[in-house]
Amino acid sequence: MQTVLRCAALLGVCWMFGCDEPARTTEQPPPGAATTPSSDSPKAAAGGPWKNAADWPRFLGPTSDGKSPEVGLVAAPLADVAIQFELPMGEGYATVAVSDGKLFAFDRVDDLARLRCLDARSGEQHWEFTYETDYRDLYGYDGGPRAQPVVDGSRVYIYGAEGMLHCLDTAHGRPVWKKHVSREYDVVQNFFGVGSCPFVYEDLLIVMVGGSDKASLKLPPGALDRVRGNGSGLVAFDKQTGEQRWRLSDELASYSSPVVFPINGRPVGLAFMRGGLLAFNPRSGRQHFFFAWQSSKLESVNASNPVVVGDQVFVSETYGPGAALLKITADGYKVLWQDDPRERRRAMQTHWNTAIHVDGYLYGSSGRHRGDAELRCIEWATGKVQWSQPGLTRSSLLYVDGCFICLGEDGKLYQVQATPEEYHAQPARLRNANGDKLAAGETSLTEPAWAAPVLSHGLLYLRGRDKLICLPLAAQSKQARSPAAD
Image 1 (cartoon, rainbow, N blue to C red):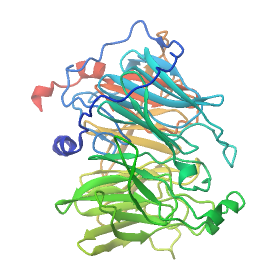
Image 2 (image 1 turned 90 degrees about the vertical axis):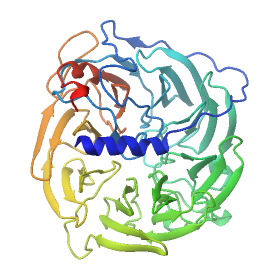
Image 3 (image 1 turned 60 degrees about the horizontal axis):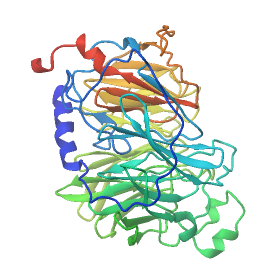
């Protein structure tokens, strides 16, 4: 396991964000409400008793795969851990970003979308930026943002549920540039609004847009099967100015997020669009291939991120076809295996969560509904199911130091030790900010807890419906073996 973590850490070096020139600024936004840090919080300063401390500046972490390179944090069970601070949250499902000691939390209060910059260890607020939003969900779900903020050096990018894209400076929250992407590219509102996180690659900000032709704007709400794209499925903007650099594909947007990985010695962009997997050159915007993978159900979505290992990429959805594994070649792709549409059982059907690869196996939550979701292990090369564990609700995983941290949508937290042969879950035992012990597995979060867990510099951040909590995993290192022994 430690070998895998070291490899993940080395890969992360290739993807760490660089620093930009100072951002152009305007009037500073008003300060926000006070936070409530715990008075007896353990310290989790950088350079603590663990190794490979890292920021979490983008979706699924520094290596875009849900893995943390940090070592020496959770070798002992998550027992008697005090919540370091709690942060009240408004509407939205967006998880947080952490960079340079700052925590960026994106939500909505009344008719204002809000980005707050806070101290990552105490939760004390530095600044707040807001803008007006009129987004209304077609199905009556939450009206807040879904996409995690993305931090790149001295700038942070936010992409709201209504399609507003902002670039702000991280020092004061002052706007550098903004674009109303949905209006500019004639985006027909998706079932649940914008849910895809942008991706910074070199001097570009790659954004899933999914614009349409003018005629499609007159269609009734939800008629996505009749919407026709206008070549803006993906759009790359100059990250400094917001100017369009390239656009690609008639595909409509999904809730998955674009990524870029080095494959066969060159960068390959991957975006799991509404209709399937799009592979492209991230510098030029030229399409490499498109692999159709979509449920026949109108009211279905692709939301899980592609998982990349070497020159192979795994995709999964929960509404119909299930999962497939492709090998990327010089002239396209080769299907290594895919779920058989004639069979009822699927290898892996991830919903909004993304499966995590460890040592030739995939671990993830499979299932469309809360009641039928199972934590599952499958063999990467074949899709063969090794085991399935029900009862955890639809859940999100984070892999660190040889184990999984599992957050269920019901707000319950587990530490999971898993191999292809066995599964063992240890419910977390936490204390709230007042020092009171919570029941096994309880976190004080109210459901739905759909945001992916975030781990940075020894601190674990978990979001539920109306609050964010911060847990100091670094405190567990006192019970764990010394990092020097690894």
